Amino acid sequence: MIRIYNTLSKKKEDFIPLEEGKVRMYVCGPTVYNFIHIGNARPMIVFDTVRRYLEHKGYEVNYVSNFTDVDDKIIKKANEEGVPAEEISQRYIEECKKDMEGMNIKPATTHPLATSEIDGMIDMIGDLIEKGYAYAVNGTVYFRTRRFEEYGKLSHKNLDDLQAGNRSLLVSGEEEKEDPLDFVLWKPKKEGEPFWTSPWGDGRPGWHIECSVMSRRYLGEQIDIHGGGEDLVFPHHENEIAQSEACSGKLFARYWMHNAFLNIDNKKMSKSLGNFFTVREISERYELQVLRFFMLNAHYRSPLNFSAELMEASRNGLERIRTAAENLQYLAQHAKTAELTPEEEKILEGAGAFEEAFDRSMDDDFNTADAIAAVFDLVKYANTHAGEDSSSALAEGLGSRVRGLCDILGIITEQERELLDTEVEALIDERQAARKAKNFARADEIRSLLLEKGILLEDTREGVKWKRA
Image 1 (cartoon, helix red, strand yellow):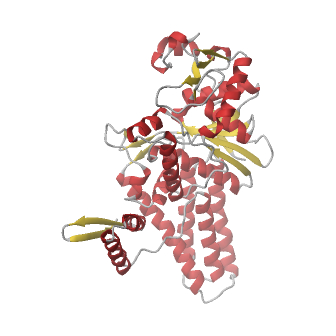
Image 2 (cartoon, rainbow, N blue to C red; image 1 turned 90 degrees about the vertical axis):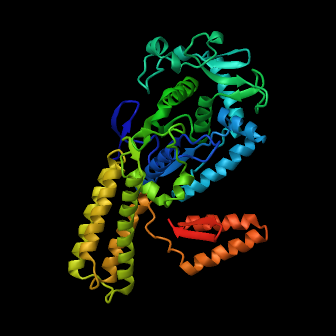
Image 3 (cartoon, rainbow, N blue to C red; image 1 turned 135 degrees about the vertical axis):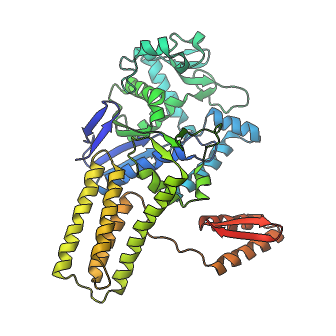
């Protein structure tokens, strides 16, 4: 039985889905105005792994993760570049998908875009007004927070305390509101911003309503798991619950999962501190599988500290597992005998204990740190019991177990072979020729290809110098 820590109840609960054998899961995705940063990467990796484990246990998972493609930051970037907001969002959705592929994150069943769901948002806002949960003032529509009696049940915040002691948490525009705690569902258009026509005037939706509508459309009124970073608990997820449950009269999500923050060298990541890293920047120094392995070495609810030392340790740990997997593959291909001996049958049977330990760890609120420890124990066991005299059946049996557990975690054990020096030199020559011919697209393509293979180029007066990362 899988047990999940539910933010709603603040305790671990047995996982019982709404529909037997099926899981409906919604995870808040990124706002696409730039390359995703490593803070964005944590929930992506965490909930991809949750999904993979649920599928391993035989569940059919309908996994929905959105892209927020209309937002103040997107509009600001579009105005700075003098291009439509849609151009910015589409550009960074594509870049985000490249980074997700590098981290071996499976595409969601559906990746809805907020801008494609505006009609549904207008309908839901209309329903909320009709039911007395929302009201319009001068083109803005607000949600009546106090009207939803269970408001605060996820974040465990008290409405009166919020109003008295946390003025900074309140949304601006209080003079129009019936209550300072009411939040925006629809806002009127401003000059130079994208807008849509609604019964309350031209404008665009508030952030919170977007996820409620996308979740309802692709998963139904009730879902099993809703996930995201702990920074979304309040107000985003709290507001999602209020809107969705006010509309449907049903419990919105049964299990709420939140990953903890990522710090950089024990400090909060911020551009002002100069410790802000995009996934793309990390990919220039490390294979993104190392980033995934690093993230999974901690429990998702534990704060995670990112540092060069910890990334090196993760690279070395991943290398140990891959070396063992490759060695087992080599032994399987070059074994003198094919069939298992009676002694080898017992060895293979003994390997099952590590798979059981892996499952026990993952059943306990997806404890990937302990699951990885079980993989290392299996690797040590395989290294001890498989050698040149082993049958191909034993080497293959142990190897498939190592690969199988890694696959559940989204860890790829097969390493791409490094480019030979001669191949690197040939590609650099081709790049130089492309630049001379002013074919800069091909030149950039070659640089990117080399970067993916861990080759760093430096253009100097003496020519192009290169080194392996």
